[in-house]
Image 1 (tube, one colour):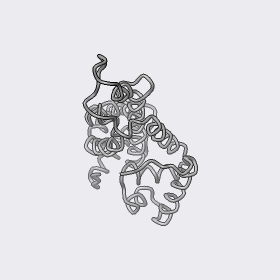
Image 2 (image 1 turned 180 degrees about the horizontal axis):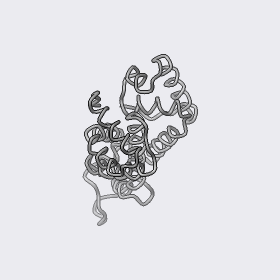
Image 3 (image 1 turned 90 degrees about the horizontal axis):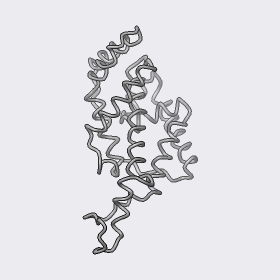
Length: 208
């Protein structure tokens, strides 16, 4: 992800204006961070092959930006790291909603995949490709539970997990962003992974 000192200063400048009650800062903040947010959407969308089959990065970004814009009407982040933490949450929720939309019981994707098993010649639509392994409702369920459990982590562990896993920061960058030592980052990262491992009964989804 692109991270420059000048852009961080710009973002924190808009956050200060937002804190001061300047509502126009919301749009300018999103515009300033658009490239970084698009990079974050693209990275997270790669983990959602079943959604990427139906939605493009720009479409997901637009919907996630609307969510984030609304969230900024209620939440006033203090620092750029808080802003991107909020962005990651809203992007994650957008992707989860899309996954449920396409692959829930009445979803277009679930219907699309199930048709592949119909015998040809019965007048039903048969897709040109076989359903992917991640079309399995059990796989979708595990992804949904995984991201929900991330949101249930204690704040310290959730912050570190979000910066490392979702935003792709190095442990050194996360330590600088949070103002803590790398040793503390390592401890909270290990703690977060153990909590998720226990919550998901040892079945963590694969990561890229």
